[in-house]
Image (cartoon, rainbow, N blue to C red; front, side, top):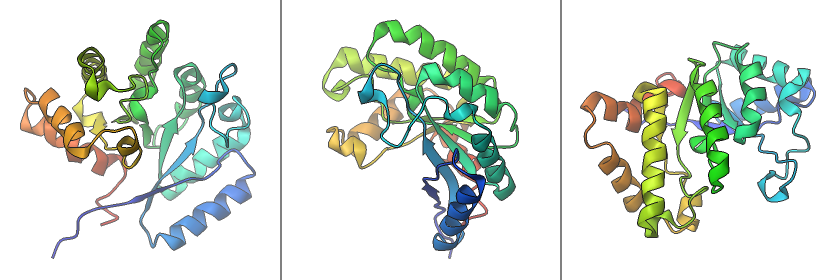
Length: 230
């Protein structure tokens, strides 16, 4: 009987001492019984807005450190994906380091954290283009309400969300994009699974079966190496 593929993504602070990162990675691998397929170290930091800085992110310079590079190298050695969670103004630092690890599978989170400030949109667009130039970067289409609070009840906001999703699909290609529920966080935001996936299906109804298979399944399997963890 076949088993549905699934994997676990864990938090590891990759910018601390390499020995500490290695110890945490090994512990996660042991506890997960081989299901560990990715590491998400949230890097979101904003110099002026504390609300946009993740509590565990002590500095906006973490991606420039030698320890962070060594942490990424450990992920390469273990064949584990890296989930990139950062704001658009941090993407230049991300591209500078990730470009040196072409074999590392990278999953950019949450449509690149486009926020509600329209003046922010051009910076976001330039950042997304820079990420898309790295062939090992995948885009996760998730947490759509971040820059559009209440979009599921507002047609104009919903249109912006749709356009953002379709723009990223065109930029990265279906083979490097994946839909994700972000549950249970999206549930707290008032968005049901049926609403979320009905939108995903409607927005892609003109796509081929191959493209939709990538968006809803195949890209995630490839990005997280789920074939070998099943």
